[in-house]
Length: 123
Image (cartoon, one colour):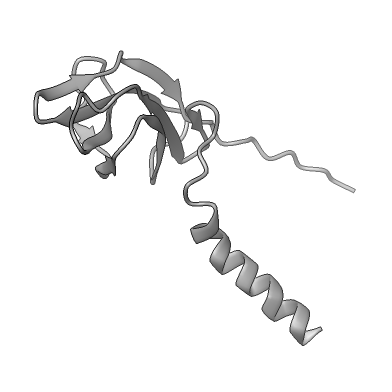
């Protein structure tokens, strides 16, 4: 029993690192998070490109920014932003920067999930 507990604890701890590179197939939202997904089409002849996501509560004011990620080749990238408000519509876009400048993806929207109502069962 003790060995099983340690094994499960190790799987739980290391799964964050093992699966950190795994992206969902598209942007998805939970109650208090959004897992942003984008695709870098090319590096524009540079050795590397910096990518990130911008988001906010208004389509014209994407005032928050995720951590920057450095990519050396075209690929799908993602970032999970946590501590967001439930039942809230967020607007977002991907961004990429190389020596030629910064390019932005189209602005999209996604709504975080709402809190589930509790059902009371009385016996």
